[in-house]
Image (cartoon, rainbow, N blue to C red; front, side, top):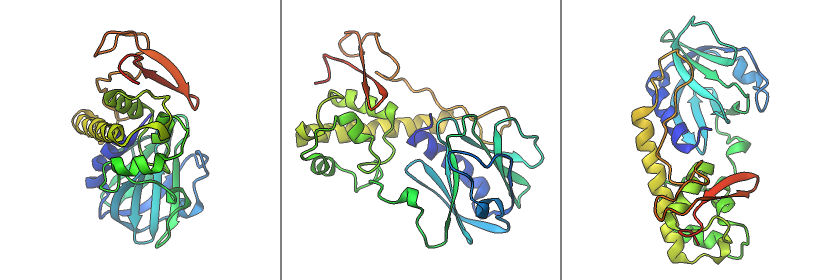
Length: 269
């Protein structure tokens, strides 16, 4: 599943090809994604892309007519291709550009989204979001203050987009391991000092993933399938039963909010 580093790398990958380009036509072959694609997007024509940004896991294409919001869901991907490349079974939307290229949205499971917000309006999906994890607004003191009085386990706490955006299942597990915090510990029972370690761990694992993604993601202009997301060397994610990289004890597995969590019973407390 694309998480924040993959989405950020995708944004950076498509930026040179769509910025300042005119969207001459939007071809929609499947409008029923996680939510129906609005008619405004389907009828969009001659809109110039004036900004390409990211908020949480949304890629935002701001135009002089409004804003297109793209969410990759669990299996979505974006590619830049020459116009006329035949679509595959899961190629649902093409944004044709004045350059002769197109931005193609692919999503086998259709859990992603292509949405619209008029100029000057913030889409409801972007309201009530917490700070970006690599921003100055996100800090150990902020996390500690938000956690006061909460019995919620720390893993789902840091995965809550109202607390902080973009800390998905993979990076939550890796950050908690790096900080030595048990994923089931109540968020409100963690000291400021340990939140300082957790904040540093979240920033470190996301920055490492961004650095890896920037060098190993497949070319966004190739037509040979979806871009391949980087395979990071992960300490705990997907390694249940294997030895801990620190102490060699077998890694354990638990569920938090229906999401699998792998952790070390010795190193995390």
